[in-house]
Amino acid sequence: MRLTYGNYRHEIYETSASATAKVLRTPRGHPYAVERRIALKGQLHAETQSELKSKIENVLQAYSQDGGDFSLDWNDGAQTPDLAIRNRDCIGGIRVISRPTNQQVYNAEYSTYWDYAIELEAIERIAAVNTQFLWSFEETIEFTGTGGPSRVGIALKRERGDIQRPRRFTLCHAVQSGKVVGLNGPPDIFVPRPRWAAFENEELRRYSFFSPKNQNGTFTEFGIAYSYSFIHNAPFPGSPYATAQ
Image (spheres, rainbow, N blue to C red):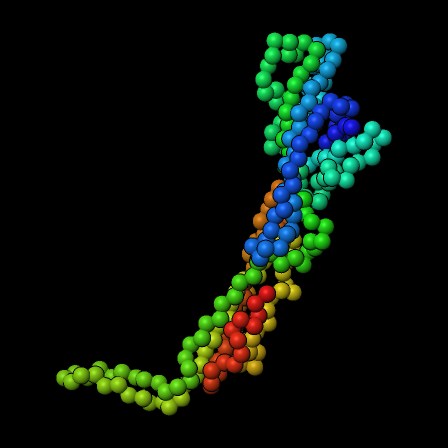
């Protein structure tokens, strides 16, 4: 077995690897990616110190940058299915979080061998996740008025104030507002339509667009906020939770 990172291939049986794979979920509880952490431990061998120096420089150079594909390969070059990670499939790419380091120097270290440890991290998208994946959704519907009579208070100069009911019926108002966030792209198709379209005051309709997060060149969490205003001569029908996604 041998490990490969980018264009660098470790010698056969030079390095051992331990890995973890933690499923990540959206605020709505749906899995969208797997957080992978890979710890490598290896030992470089050489017949001379000059050759060893060259090998150390090569492995340091190989892991000096993020973004290399990683795989555990059989001796014939075929990749194992459980430890083959492509940089393009990861949010923010594959990252080197600990570069090749000699954690403990023994007396014979640097003579003809060199021990090292490396750590990699990647958030690998789940294959089923596409650009229309809903990250989060929240909505508020606010009602004002019941349609009943209005009350008006009139302050008097020398007497207690007077309460009058100048109107037997009044208007009802409602505001439907919320925010939708798409994981990999704008969540246009998830933005709810106005609940009571026939009673919407369209001149007050508002949309706000939020810049996505940039994770090492990968853009995620595209947000759209919306607000619809309604006016009616009676209480609005239906459940306020009908648009919950």
